[in-house]
Length: 501
Image (cartoon, rainbow, N blue to C red; front, top):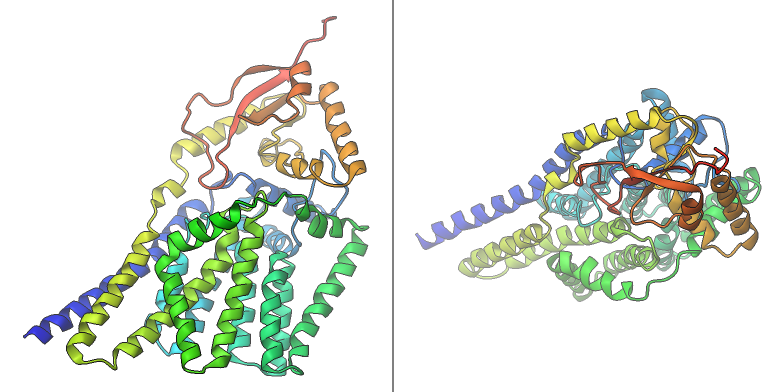
């Protein structure tokens, strides 16, 4: 009778764990339905991605000298060209870019599931890993489906990792090298992550590893030379030099390990260490080296980005992906280990394991409604666009340069990209850009300048030549982005009248 009760408890705890896990995937899918077609920013820099795609669709180069009119995002171009192709089909806006990210995020879930399933021959373990990664949606910045490069970059990277783990033939290594290169052409962090994986390939087979890193060197080196030549040297400036402008935040090293990794993933991290320890004890050197070095690469890529000013929670995605993979592998390994203990203790231990896993999922709980723009947000945005469309002449909204586009007006560079440029090490570029902006303000080229608050964007020059005409929104709770920096248009500045008027 006692054994029957334990069996029921085992099933109950296992199915409770499955429900907790699957809920996160279902929640994410529902969130996407509400978010993907929202015509305004979910995150304050999304508009720059749309602006970049529009440049591509107009036939212009995206890596050009920084100017008030346009400054490129400091990323490699693959995501933007794929998004441009989708935009040609369904129209310009946020939806095509978010669609690319959404499909890529589903691809990440599937690759994680199939990798763990292939390693364990367990759908249960694969589902746990994929669901845990889905559960990090809010912890990683609610970034899976927005118009940014990260989901596509991670998807391509995970496919390459899957291929290397399951097949080390020459053709597979070439294919993996191509995918890593494509991941780099989406986001440069892929290169940092791939270095420890290259080391694994060398340890596994020194001669065959040439197919992997040789492919990477050939594609990344060749594409860099070609893109730099096509853009008159500005490709290197944006992709390799601009990222170095951001100052290092030394305190983020502690924040990364304590708050980003251990606090939200303490159980998964502990189980990951357990899994790696088991591989050593079993003398499974190949398995240990692969996951240990892949974890070093993924964690190093996340840490490197997090240490720089502007490194938001989205940079944690690679770290959470590998921890989620190890979590599923560790759960399966623990269940196998439990089978070797006496029956009564086995059932009790199995229940405890499932409860521990449930706690890990509970730790990652978040309010999904807070990630969905409201009807009031949508109405406020439409009213604001209507206001902009009725203003005469050019207007500039530095923190949200896509908004004038929606009002049928020209767009200008994002203020964060302007800030990055002005913080750079190239005095001639800085001086030219600063002079261009100051001159435009002094000449009162804009019929309105709309600033976020607090944000001292050329405030001294604006105060001399413009006057604050009032607030953009009367409702203090509308039109805030649901993730990233909490900022919105606040004040409308119009030109001061000349004394002669």
